[in-house]
Amino acid sequence: MSYVPPAELARAMVDAGQSKVLMSTRDTLIRAYMAGAILTLGAAFAITVTVQTGNALLGAILFPVGFCLLYLLGFDLLTGVFTMVPIAYLDRRPGVTIGSMLRNWGLVFVGNFLGAFTVAVLITFILTYGYSITPDAVGERLGEIGESRTLGYAEHGAAGMATLFFRGMLCNWMVSTGVVAAMMSKSVPGKVIVMWMPVMLFFYMGFEHSVVNMFLFPSGLLLGGDFTLGDYLIWNEIPTVLGNLVGGVVFVGLALYITHVRTQPKRAIGAPASDRAPASARTPEPV
Image (cartoon, rainbow, N blue to C red; front, top):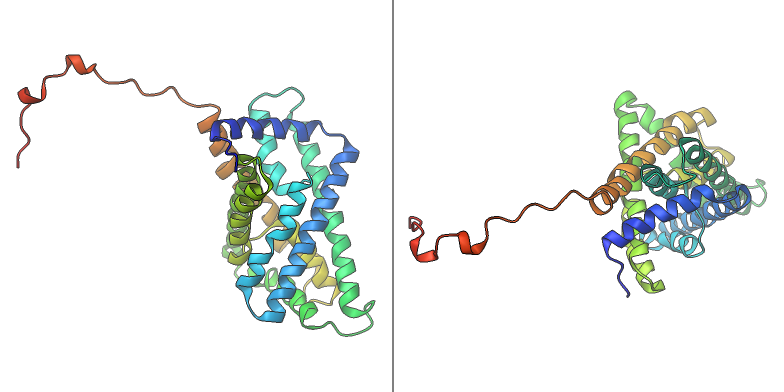
């Protein structure tokens, strides 16, 4: 694959961040809607495979299908704009302000949620024949996920909230690494390979992705999961969004921007070789 070096990659990230902020409201919403829908179809696929085979690793290996498709089609996830838009602001790109950044995040959040919720309604409808029968094993699993990953955290109080936040942070460290790593290649196979690895890792490790959760928890509620909308928002979605933001900005966006765009001057070279004592005149080191 044609390799893009890190310095060029970091500049491309800044350009992408500016482009996303300047995008029209219509285009931002459409791209975010499609991203949320395609990503969560991939999540539904992975959960179905996991339940039917009993192999969680196989589900994780297959989950990145949706992620790779939405990226190649140019759609936007909240986790991605969390990473690239802030560095465009730090670079003082024209049109990128705090207000325009928050506007972009808000529109992408809404679009992602609508896309994910659409899939949640369609999948739960299919699993229950229009909510007329008891959910099958996949539907039961969706309800269990919603309960365990809301009330399960709540049982541990502050420690549970911190765990949730850190899982969100680690998630977007990996997901955003996949997003920007895809920019290192100019070929489709190259992009897919470098996206696949970190996204598979996050899913198998059970980290918290705000957009995936926009599908999982509404699905659980629609299928009669034993938790509430408030549980979902307080004990999952809000802390997950904040963790995703920190993970994407700090560990991916800033890390690459600071060291490859705002680089420090190189260290000065020592005394010229001609000024150094010849090797024969140097004090021998003790044996």
